[in-house]
Image (cartoon, rainbow, N blue to C red):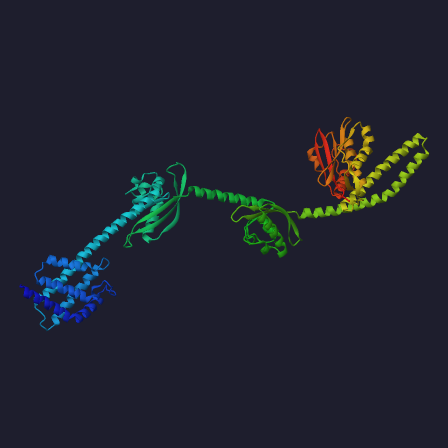
Length: 632
């Protein structure tokens, strides 16, 4: 073909395509939209750029007319198509080019104009074929690139999976549909007692025959239903410790191919032997604790930080007057009257706020009357902390204490009344005996009898005085007539009063450290009464050759007096009862046991305190304090 003819053909093809462009584009777009898989054309679609595509076809047809080889034409088409970009849908381009060919041929067949010969049509055919071949090659390259990316991603994912399997402390495995191991990690292989390599390609029945009858039906059901089985527990003999049982918790899940087909099953297995044993131990301890709670005679409970009862025994429910099931989860205000609940909550607040245990009397209304409980409340560690409580019903004890208090008061009133009424006739007897003694001084027989009567009267006078003092102290009515007194003079007078008795018993009576110049605010006779009791007791118990020491020293705001002896001492278990009324220790001389009780009452009425220390075989030391007189 000559150059002129080739140029004319190129002009005819271009002219025909330009002349029919509008109709061709319209039919082409309609054909593309009617494709079964077509959607709205994208920016990369050929049908959205018809002038450019038709120009490329015309150019390729012209190249062919000028004698360009097919290889060169294909390269030109490939370069032209390559400008479409990497993200275009090559398969869609092929479909669009095929539709364009059909539209060109249909339009050519309908055209009656002489727009060219069959060679022109063949040139258009070849041009479109070149573009389609370039698209096909592009598609092949894209698929290969995609497969390579998929393969690389698969290797990356498999690498991560292998790392996960190797590093996981929990047993992991994947099996095919025949329940043969595809992958298993070291943790699960160790559980089975075999190396990882021994598992691959072998079935569960071969590797773990002891649990295969349990696991196989479960795994096949997972694959059949395509559903996960969570936390299935099973027990098996330990491959590592013969004779022992191990407990495992397993989750099984179906493994699917990209198509959705189930191709196997995966499992996550963890040993929970220790945890199950701990749970069993905890349940056993809880049962033991509940048994202890139920059989203890006290009411026991635990409240959380909101005041709700989270643990209790049935005795608490009985004490509150509610069924046990109504007590758990309730607060005090849900179970008790408002004022009673407020008292209980106030005690709880002290425990929680100050983090210390307290003991308090608490009250609960009951049909038979108000019941009194001695409650010990204590903090329990936690986040947030809780409050525990143990309460003992002391209603009967409180009633007995009240009855005893009333009885003691009645007794003291009777004793006081009787003592007061006895004092007048006793004074008469004492006066009469003294008168007779003065008149019958020469008759020794009558004098001896009158002296017995007189000594008995003095003793009775002391007893009556003690009873009256005790009644006054018990009622809080002991009267004092205080004024500033020199402390050393009071101490010296106490020594002088008891010197004759000390000489008689051959006991040394020693004065140490007089408080010269110090004034105490006191009732002098009452303080001498305290000394009389303490020194008198010391002289009673001391043996010949022992020493009784009277001492005094100033403290911050008082003078502390002491009576210390080298006598036999007092046993430790008796010290706590020395100051109780009507109590005398073993081996004590005759007496009603009121002296130390009265001495303590006198000292405390002055605002001081009395104390005792004693060691058996070494002696005793009684000390008491009297406040200093205010400066005038």
